Length: 106
Image (cartoon, rainbow, N blue to C red; front, side, top):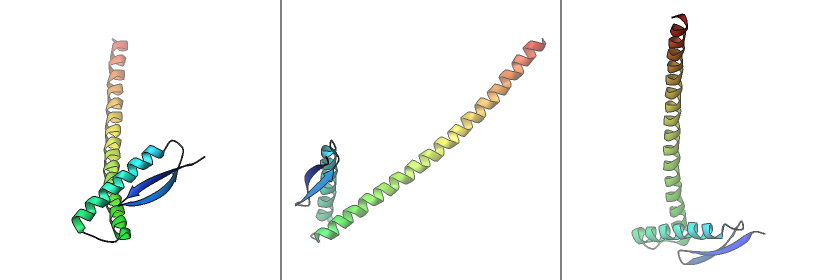
C-alpha cells in the first residue's frame, strides 16, 4: 500500500504519496526544496508562493541540466579511453604474437 508523507515547503504543508519505504527520502527531498526556496526568498524578497516554487524548480532544472552535460562528457571521455585501451591491447597482442612466432621459428 502506498505511503503518505506530510512535508512543509515555504511554510505550507503538502501531503505527498510515495512508495512504502520512501518516506524518509521524500522528506529529505522536500527539505532540500524548502531550503532552496527560502534562500531564494531571502535574495529576491517577498513573492507569491507559485512564483517562488517555480523559480526553485528552474534552479533545480538548471542544476540537473548541468549534471547531465557533465555526465555526457564523462561518458564520452570514458568511451574514448575504452577505445584507446582496446587499440593498445590489440597492438600489444600483435607484438606478443610476433614474439611467439619468432620463438617458434628460432
